[in-house]
Structures are given as C-alpha cells and as structure tokens.
Image (cartoon, rainbow, N blue to C red; front, side, top):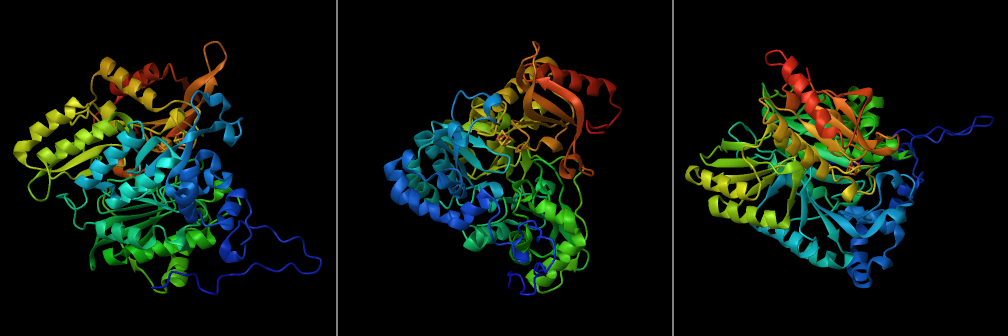
Length: 558
Ligand code: SF4
C-alpha cells in the first residue's frame, strides 16, 4: 500500500507583478518549502542523520571525543540515542546563558529503545551488563519504556551496539526527529483483560520503518503508542492506537492523533476510525507521512504534529490520510472504554495462563546495572526471566508460578523494589534533571527520592492513587501537566530574595486512562511556586488538606 503523498499536493501561489513578497509559510514540504529554514533543518538536509553511525564506527570511536564534528555532536548523534550529558557542577541559573559547548561533557547519555517495553532474559542480562561495564552502573527506566545510561564514552559505542544488536535491541532513532520508541501495554500477551495483543503491529512497524531513511527526517520527534488496554499515556502521543471492539468488525484499534505535552500541551484527538491489527502499520505510516510532508518545519516550537492537527481539525486530517496516503476510506469506529481504576500493574496479578506477574516500583525509575543484574537473576529463578518496563518508570516480572511469588517478592524487596509500595512511591515519576540533562534548571531524581521518603515518614500511606511528576524544566519529559501534582522546574525567589531551585505547581491534571474519566491538564495557578527545599513540606500540606477535605470517592483531581 502506498504511503507517498499524491502528486496533487497543493502548490504555493506564485508571486505576481506588484504582489507582496511570498509568505515564508510554515516550512511544509508538501507545499514546496524544501529549503531548510533553521539550523536543525539544515543539519538534517546536509547529511541524513542515520549516516553518522558509520562515522562513529570508523572515525570517532578511534580518535575520541575531540574528533566529533559539531553538527554530529549536537545533532545527528541523537538518531543513534546519544546526547552529550551536562558537565557536572553547572547550576540551573547558567543553563540558558551558556553556549551549548560550555554545557557539554565528554560523556554521553545513551537511550536504548525497548519497543513495547518487552525484555527477554538475554536482553535483560545484556542491558545490565552494559551498565556495569560501560556506564558506571547507571541505568534509569524512562517514562517511555526506554533504558537510559550515562557516562558513555564514544570509544565504547561499537562494542555497545554489537552487544545490544546481538540480542535484538537497538538505539536506532531512540532520539532525534524521527519515530521514537513505540509504547505498548506492559502486559501485552499476558493480560486476562486483553482481547488482542498489539505486539505484532509494534514489531512490524519497528521492522519496516525504524532506520528507514524515508522517515528519518521528520519535522521533530514522533511518539507512538499501540496497546489494547488503555494502560499507557496514549493521549500524550503524536499517534496512538487503543483497543476497541467494533460491533460489526470485532476487535481492532481506535486511532488518535496530535497529542504532546511540553510547552503548548495538547491531548490527542480521535479520528473516529477503526483499524484492524494487520492494517495498523500501514495506517501508522500514513500518519507519519502526513507529518513528514505537511508538518511545520520553520519554527522548532511549532514543529510537532499537534500544531498541524489543531490547525486542520480531525476531519481534514482524516480526509488527507484516506485520500492522499492510504487511497481508501477507513471504517468508522467506536471509542475505547476507560478503566474504572488506573492500570499501573503494581502488585501481584494473575496472567491469562494461570501464572502471575509482579509489578514493582523503583523510586522515579532509578535503578542500576547491579540492580538489573539481580532482577534478571530473580526473574529467571522464579519465573521465565521475561521482564517488562512500564511508561510509569516501573518494572514487571512475568510468568511466575503461584508458589514462587513470595520468594520473588522477598528477593526484590532486598534490592528496594517493592511490590506493595506506598502510593507516594507508586505514583511518583521524575525526568533526568540537572544531574545529566543540559536543558535542566533543577535537580529531579534525588528530589523525588527525598520527597517520597518525607511523605512516607510523615503521612504513611494514602488510600487512593495520587501522581506526582517531577520535571527539571518546562519541557515536561515527565509529563508535568497530567499529574495530580505536576512540578515544573524553574528558579524561584529564595528566603533571602536570591534565585534558587524551585518548582511551579500544576494541580489536578491527569490522563483519562489514569483517572477513569476524561483527561485534562492540571491547573497552573499563577504564583503557585515553591522552592525545592520547601517542596516536601508543601506537598505534605497539599495532601493533608486533600485528605481532610475530600468527600467520599472524591479523587484528587476533582
Ligand atoms: Fe531535561 Fe527538561 Fe526533559 Fe527534564 S523535562 S529531562 S530537565 S529537558
């Protein structure tokens, strides 16, 4: 099935005599704006970013960091999951004033894509081994089901790629303006509630299109979710396929487009179509094709698909998808049903084959190679060895016979992975923050750990779910706007008037899948800010006041 745009794509009007200068437009390729309009577009046009892999293997890994071309260093290496990490000791006040090279360390953050969040026993071992061998024992579980390392040397990349690719993992397009990791249900294929396992569609998209140069120069990043269960943050993705039962056609997927947070957050919208499993890859490619050809490239902050969807509306988007990219009509379909309770899969749950899976919480996704090695050992000793990562920075161990569950839970507790965590630990996420991220203004992971510890000590547990998302800057990598308590890192006035690390507070946000109702953004109350030091006491006060004032069954967001 063709996914190329038709030759009838509209052309820009020619400027006639006496006519004003032609507007520059938004940089849409399909409208003839092929000339790069900003440095990022120029870098991509000068050389396809996927080509940088060969230069790493043949030049940079041998000659070292200093040999890396600046356009590769701060641009194209991202297509292979590599970002320079922040030089230690630079405070958040200098983030915006320093030149990029002044923030660069000679080490890299490396993101490994784990599409669908699924790891085999061999993959777990390799992921853990790379951490201890090459990454100073660092490993974070990201909120997009990736594994993220730090302290990576360019010299070690050929060996790391060889190890990862030897077990079917990759860093290809883990970052960059391209199709990033595909989110999937952490319980795909084992859930008793699942009607259709979406994994074959995820695998097929990765096989066909990841690393395909036809899709390696998109206007910006492109985020995908494909899941039968609404247990993934699908409304925050550029494209999402969520399971639905069609009254005539049976199980398939409901298509959503145009979600994205960061600045100008927007939730994805339904196109109102039903897509059978085997057509998901073609329809996905059609949506990506629209983004590639019609997406805005002139201004980086308007280059996400959400802006095009907002301008076109879903009716026009569907028309273009059907008419120019699929060359057929799609079937109208129903909306998915939302769960009554949030589905984060923490705790012990029976699988569809009578065995069990155990979901455990590391605080804000921070683990290590040593911890992952022990998880791999425990998963093999008590289960099949299969592990899943969740988009909430948590871990599931699969295929555990009933009489092995307690042994597994006890073993995991010894490495501080809890199957019965407090709601504070269970509901808290954090982005990378100032420890390694060059865009950060504040520290996040350690703050999240302190916050969880403080709330556990002062309030004990909570009898309802409550989410706290800690972000180091406005980019919202840990989804600031859709938490019960969303924290956006910024500098705020300290007690003596000097600017110190702090957070702007967003209250009462949430995604539909996490709330069992319509999703929405937290309220950003002007002036509602706290210093980082006062954060634990602030959140404690908010929680106490919610508990004291709530009516029966009233969630935090209400
Ligand atoms: Fe970095 Fe900001 Fe994203 Fe956090 S939200 S990882 S600080 S860019």
